[in-house]
Amino acid sequence: MNKKLLMTIVILVLCCAVVAGGIAAVKAIKDRSNTPHEVSDPVENTDPSGQQGQSGQSGQQGQQGQSGTQTGDNTQQGQSGQSGQQGQQGQSGQSGQQGQQGQSGTQTGDNTQQGQTGSEGQTGNEGQTGSEGQSGNEGQSGNEGQTGSEGQSGNTGSTDAEPGDKITAYLLMGIDKSTQAGDVDYYYGGGQSDVMNLFVFNDTKKTFTQLQIDRDTMADVDILGVYGDPYRTEYTHLCLAYAMSTGTEKSAENVVRAVSRLLGGVKIDGYAAMTYAGVAPVNDKLGGIKVYVEDDLTSVDPALRQGQTVELKGETATNFIRARMSVGDGKNTSRMRRQRAYLSAFEKRLFEEIKVRSKIVDDLYNAAKPYMVTNMSSSQMTKIAIKASQYASLGIVNIEGERGSMTHNGKLYTALYPDKDALRELVKKLFGNVSF
Image (cartoon, rainbow, N blue to C red; front, side):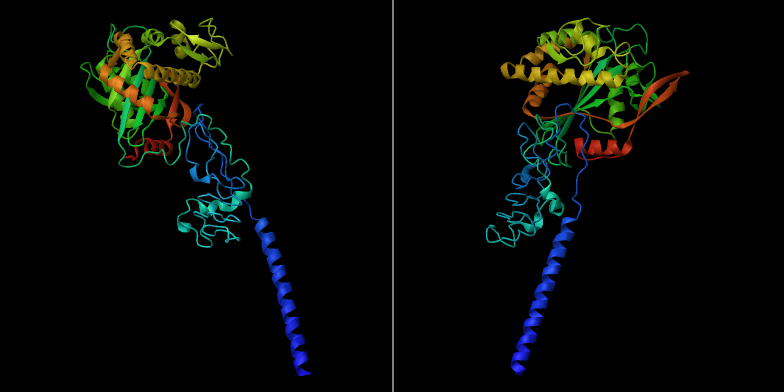
């Protein structure tokens, strides 16, 4: 009788334990389903060529999370593929229900009998972003990068410069004059540097980036005496650095110093400054450049109709990249957008031609020579252009800052005041270190 009573009590205890366990499991599942997923904010893309395959956060199977840092034309791999239900190759997925290969998840999933590494995982402690594996169930777009159709300009961790990388930089300037270089009749009459593009090459990673600098950027600029020597520094528009002399080497070197100082003292290895008068002969030597006209520019050139794709030749090319005050909203930012479109199309056309004959760079150099001030030879420019055609382009980036105004001689002018923190990060990405 005592044995039967004892057995009955044991059975009742076991039943209670099973019921309690079931309730706890249901509660745990419910709590987990209510956990908010982590979602990355979209990054604004300032480059029309598509910086990276940005979305693709996870994908239901997370097979492609491994190479989210890749850019290029094949955007099928998305940025992270954070976990996914199966996590076959999800480098950063923390769990994945089946974890067939569980390469870096710290828990290779419930059904470990199918995973190569079972409950341990090959490199469980090295999962790059395993802590974000929560959002694996939402990433339905893992197979489609949002913007990376060209993807050459992705600012991903793998393309950022690092300390020790070999970096070279060259400053190209467009001068607001319609004459040959140095053709001025008074001191301080050399013109202003309307265009400033710093080409930064990472020779270690085989990439290059164009830093487009707004002419209205406020910076410390050397004021030159009549012999071309700095005698004081003034916080003013960066474009005025070129106007401090006679539009020759002293003017160009003054811009180089100002840009280098703005970027924390980075080394600039070469420069070339060309007046607007050189645009047409250089453009035509390359056979003309096709662009899409986003703004109505017919007030300065009837060929530049809004919404048309136009092959720029002769003065039409000059008008497209120079016109500002009398067209559209009259802002320099709109002109910079047109200049980016032109430079991208010019770069593409040049690289195509270089594949056929590299001598084209020498032809362009000679066409620009009467209108250009430079410390580089034709052979140097040829080597740089060939290198650029072989490297991966990371696109065109800009300096962030606050739009405001400044007063000079009683007149109000537009000004861009750089965001110093953002500028430090930009310099670090381009040059690998920062000294300001």
